[in-house]
Image (cartoon, rainbow, N blue to C red; front, side, top):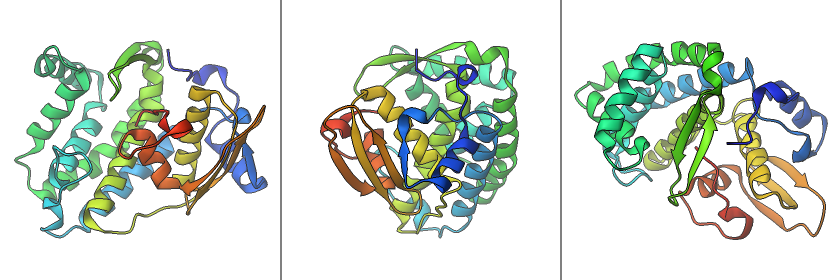
Length: 271
């Protein structure tokens, strides 16, 4: 199982915001995964920022290739809409997952899921796609945050390196789905050469949560300086600690598998 245990951790996104404001160096051992209601707030804001970005695109920018080789910007937006809509109700989620399993065949479920999402939304006009995403975003955030018994359901995930790990559904609802939209916002801004809207209060919390999970996964000491509006200074002591300095967004891209990393940066974190 993932180390995520929302019921057993005392800290939250609000605590993380306080830490970022109160000190220059954050000890990752004192950090815990984001919890509700902070997870609902972050999910709502992130989808709204994606909607704002999509509204700013020109016709040519919708056709640009992205860091996900199979998708241009238009296909990626269709995936984001599909993933958002999937988690707006139990019936819709179950129907979509059955269709995804059929589409995936013997392959990873996530491949079948993303394929049917892109296909289902391919015929939508750009304006309609954006309107549906704007409507679905708050609904999905509230629905994901309102799950109780479902949060303990095990969810298997195949990583890019072929390894399989099992999460609790609460980790998917609170953390991974928001990271997914956030990383695709990174992908689209890179593809279109547009600036990415970044704030410490929103993006900084998402990035810091990624740092904390990365640290839990590799378990080794480090000193880390992440630059940019979403960055910060993080530490885990206990031995000889390598010093790393890089842009906060590039750090997340590396951990997601979008860019190469070695040493501690080779540790994968799900997005």
